[in-house]
Length: 456
Image 1 (cartoon, helix red, strand yellow):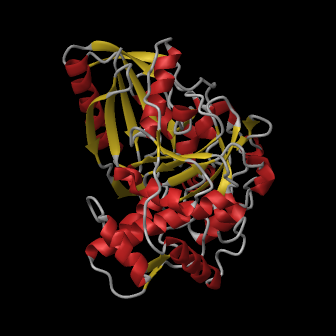
Image 2 (cartoon, helix red, strand yellow):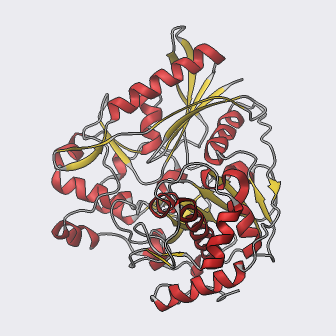
Image 3 (cartoon, one colour):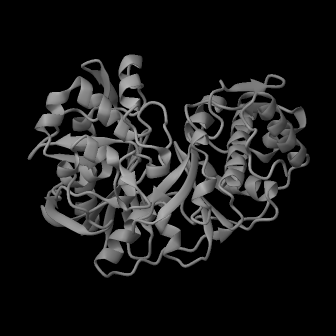
């Protein structure tokens, strides 16, 4: 069996073709377009659909793909009637006007119920739902179903309208993890009746012909799948660091009462509805901002020069995260282009290190995703935290691999994903002192006072 996985990210969208040995046989990439319409930032859904339809069709014709699974970023919803969107899909990176924000924020459930911190912009998509309902009530009135972003795409490609618990539980304000039910907001706004029935991640929910051959392809329900890729390998107690536009640090062993709502700490939900304590920041976006969109490898020598010179990026370069409320800045002598990239990678490593403290991580840490290209990020973390075991995913595409595993499992087929590999600590002189200085400067700026465990 061969399976296509569409991975719809905020910045990049990708298609992968997997076989049962978890090998990626083919891949395609594009960038979604976010446009202005009616005074709002929205997705150019038609263009993304055309790209995805062509990419899946080519995959079916070239590889005889039998199934399609979707993975999607965790901040977006879609309103649909029987056949189409009733409103374009909102860009989550926009803040409601102040007057509207004041009204809708009073209706958001308490953190103790949803474990969704009150985040800016549309990082809680329930907040954007309240906003859209105020400014476009007819779009809500016309909607038959309210779908999570990946569920929209599976529906769009011919599947049934369904809900999926790990997406609903992704800091949306819509889910109560302890009750394993919709939150009080859903009932207060009379949305429950338009939340489709639950389907487990990976389940087949439809079928459609693709490509020139018109070959029938099973449509699988999709999920927020980064953790599943490793849990299924029975590796014991794990913290997973999934990197991309967002760096998401998941530690199921962290007590729920240790989560700090003011530091972008929250509960995600696994594919079986269990709570997964999480801390996150926009590490990929921040890396681009600090590095000047550096492309390619970073030489270890550039990292050593940055450490020696004390060049540091101080948080934060994007909204939210565990160090909110400060404008990011680069301190020290003026770096060259590669040194800026090195400072950016050190920043991401130090933010992950801080996040691991906040999430009370003492177990094995697995690092995957695009920011770990070449293994340098994982090596830096292993050096910063010598008391913990570190591993790195055999693929950079952990979310897509987890999604593929769910789809294969749902039809009773084996999926032999390659086990993560141990990480060797990187060798850099002065890294511990650099870390201490970085935290000291962050503390002076008033954003690191509640770090669990203090400086190491």
